[in-house]
Length: 205
Image (cartoon, rainbow, N blue to C red; front, side, top):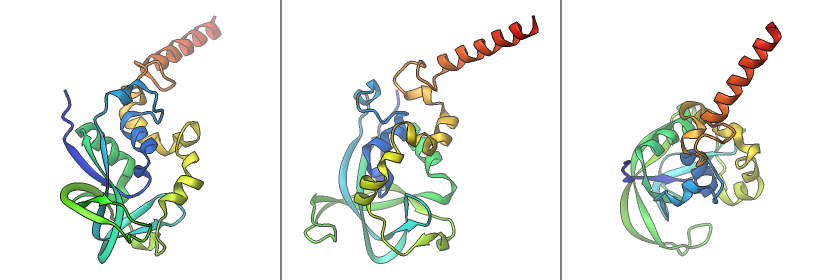
């Protein structure tokens, strides 16, 4: 049985539960049976001395260390080693998973942080940008804007391409809640292979 003891801080697309579950569980559908099994808990949190940037020509952001700046995001507990492995593939080579300390928000203020009340400091892992800084925009990435204008491209059939590397590396059937009967499941794949074999035999007769 997998241990659910990993904790991470997310500051971009993974703040959206649909995206996080799609990466970790292979589905963004809240009615999927796998959702009843997860033990994820999410809290609003602040990462100090880092700054969030837009990645040029992309929907997602990046963070870099920056003295005096803060990044608001989500602190998620209950992640498994497999979840982290899937997240590593999803984030790719542009990021490095690093240990950080974040503060849980006991009261959430406005978009500028005015009115935030910070509580306990906790350990977490987060993804720090390690690619060329020239690929980053100085402008702040906006989660509300992402939800409003880009989210539809990250969920459902339209967003399949965003998760292709994760699905290829781990197999979408492993945690899609269908027992391998989903569109990307091992049962479906086996049936398609058998169908192709039949077609080859028929064409040879």
